[in-house]
Image (cartoon, rainbow, N blue to C red; front, side, top):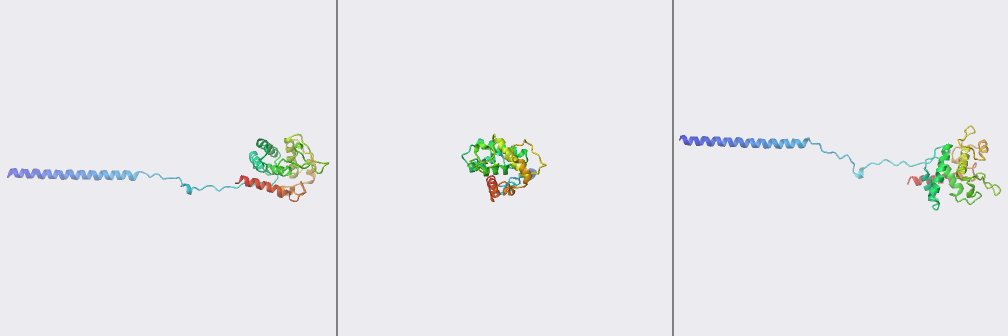
Length: 233
């Protein structure tokens, strides 16, 4: 009887111990699951800050507009002026026309003249340096300065830079009053006459003053417009 009681007590203790162990393992497992879940919930999910390609917002393109005023600063570079020139006369030498355009930019800047307008006027006056009228290529006269008839075919200058300078100075004479002095040495033989008789602000004023052609300013405006279209493509 005592033995049986002892055995029963041992079985009861063993069963109780097993239950305790089972409960402890269950509790530990639950605790581990909770800790793991908590650790994952604390991790920040990386945010994708990059917009999908189809949602990228690009800045609106600002189109270039060239000023028609004589005393505004030109905006086009020598390469851009040359690119436009070659679009109208592709047979011309690239390096030569870039150099030529750069002289226009430098000379125009010296006298605060719009180099875009001056270059466009040169294109009109010379037929993109084809000449063919009274003025001949070796005159280095790029604006028809002094060209009236066979007896007065136009002024002759010793080289490209002098001819371009005379063109710029003639525009400066139209666009300023007599109290505004030149920064470079005077090479335009008709400079003083213009100062006493003409004063304009933009290309519209060139019609009937620089040239008698009633469409003179319209033609220069057309060249400037084609320059704009080329840059804004």
